[in-house]
Each structure stands twice: as structure tokens, then as C-alpha cells.
Image (cartoon, rainbow, N blue to C red; front, side, top):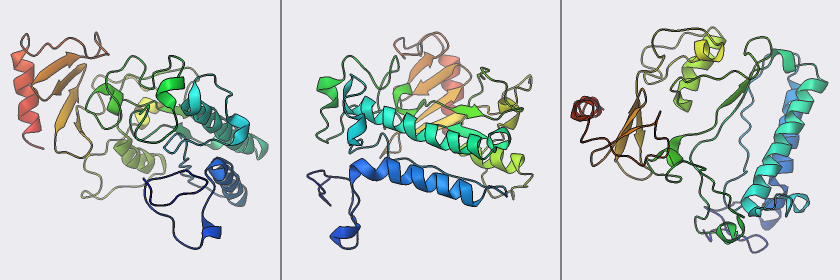
Length: 271
């Protein structure tokens, strides 16, 4: 994490160019937000896709000074507040340009939380009781729910009912097939074989069977796999958990349900 040091802050990897080109960590959120708004303004008269990949709350967590100390639960939470503020600016731009009514907005993230993964942000000591995985077991990179279960918030005025929710099993890989369906595109057979169209779930359509039957998860940096199917989850061991009754994965039911373990193991063998 010492590839490039700016203002005493280390980071994963390096930055190229002269030192004048190196970014300031406290300015990243404002810069990306400003450029996102500019992109929307420049494309307001035609359909557009904006992938707003914020730095928050990835390490090194170093929010702008105006957010430091505002959350009362450490640098990590200060960074979350900075992220919320960035989203608010983007939403305000859509409102100002009268585009909100015809824009699907999705907010999610790519992995589970990590309170401290090697940087000097002192999150563990000043978290004020905050746990980044909440009631979930495990953290970023693990096969536990704390490593893979993510928020997924969608807003689409006139299409998605406000305040509604879905119990569909969804993976971000499914956004490929879902966006193709929204835009009327047909994916070739060899493209996105593990991507499922989640548009019916977003629109609140009643269904008799799930859009995605199962989901395979992989631990970060290894070949170790887990599987979700319905309320059940199989982990190496084997370990079996019913997430409907035990979201924190505290009660291993493998011995009580050998038939489920066998079914899941056979499916994993085909991966």
C-alpha cells in the first residue's frame, strides 16, 4: 500500500505522471461528482448511461475536511456521509434538468464491508459501536453474508413503486441482462450466460418461480465456493444455513438436512 504517498496517505497501486497530476484524496468525491453532473448536462437531450464509481468508502478513507467528524462514528462513517452527499448532488441535477421522471437509478456496491484492512484510518477504535456488516457474519472477501450480501436500491418514477421491495435473489452480474431488456437489446447466446433479467422484479410483477434459481459465490483470492438457493446457503465443511430464519449464519443445519447438502454439492460440482 505504499506505491504512491500523497500527504502521508498510502494507497493500493501507483499513480502515473508527474507529481502535479497526483490526486488529493480529500478532493476525489467532489471531482467525480462534478464530472458526473457535467456528463448528465452534456447528454440531457439523449439517452445516456452513467456509471458513477465513487471512491467512497474504499480505502484509504480520507473524506473532504467538511465531512470529517460529522458522523460521530469514525472516518468510515464520515466517508459514507460524503457518499450520500455526492448522490444527493447527482439526484438534484436530474431534478433540475427535469430528467428524474425518465431515469432509472441504481445504488449498490461491489463487496462486503471492511472495518480495517491495513490503513491508518482508526476505524476500529472510533467506530462508536458501528459494525460495517451489521447483523451479518463476516467481512469483505469472505463467503459469509457479510462478504457478499449488498444493498440494492432502485428508483424509477412511474415504473418502480416507491417503498416496495423484492425477495428475488439477485447478483450484479444480472445487470447485463436486465439493462439489455430495458433497452430492448438481445444478448447473443454466448454473452452473459450467468446473467438473468431482473426487470420483472424491479417492476413488481408477480411470479410463481424465482428469476434466478441459484447463485454461486467465490471467496476472494481462492477457488472456495458457496451456493445460495432459496433460503438455503451451503458453505465448505459442509455447512448449511437457512438465511430466512438465521441471517447471521449461526446455526449449522447440515446434519439435519443431508439431502439439501447433497443437492447443492452436486450443483457446485457442475461449476
